[in-house]
Image (cartoon, rainbow, N blue to C red; front, side, top):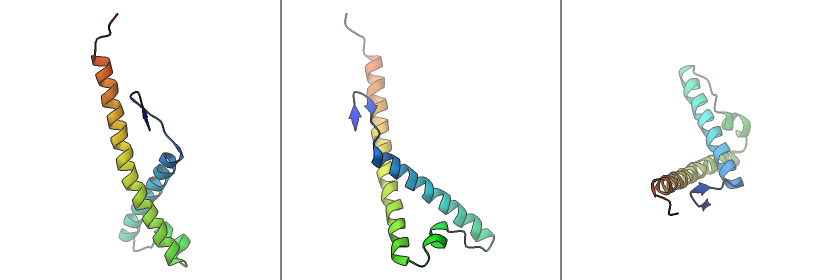
Length: 92
């Protein structure tokens, strides 16, 4: 994933980011729905008839969140590596 202080982004990175965003929006809607006494859980509304698939979506969103922690660590490492390269004087 990391190459010379840069992070290469692949399909897994984009898919996990999309799942985390969907999960965050869903949790926001659940919170708002709680105050309004409404069920705004989109995953439940779309997949309510399929509890196993609904649970699988929740598991995938959770795994995507954990993967995003790893990805953020990779971004931080690449940033530190670039900073170290800039701080080092170049030999001519």
